[in-house]
Image (cartoon, rainbow, N blue to C red; front, side):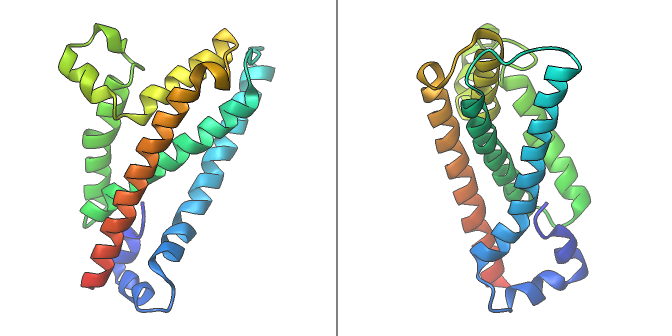
Length: 178
């Protein structure tokens, strides 16, 4: 995601030696993806309403805030993958096998977390998708909102901040080496 193409063709070093700070470079890379992710959320909710005629029973504003937090946490995962990868192909393989598959299988999307062995239930605690799915199901299907899912939102926020923080620190460390 972040700067792998620039890393491959050598323009990342040019960006790093400019007076642009690391956080500005990261923000410049992440903000467009955050906007696209948020547009995707709006499109999905609109399609859900007008194509499938499914109404959101809970607090839509809480759903949007939760979506934004989830988008930031997944962008942090993408940034983290890019700091470990040397090429785009390596990043894709790492993202699919080390990030996406565990997220899908351990989040409760494919299998209920309660039915998993205890070790996998313990691992699922650090997966932001688990909390986002609980919020989505609660808000859309059960009419829940902030009062019922604030702990899930907080957990997702903390995990997202930690992931994004580690990614930023790792990127800064890599950019100082160059």
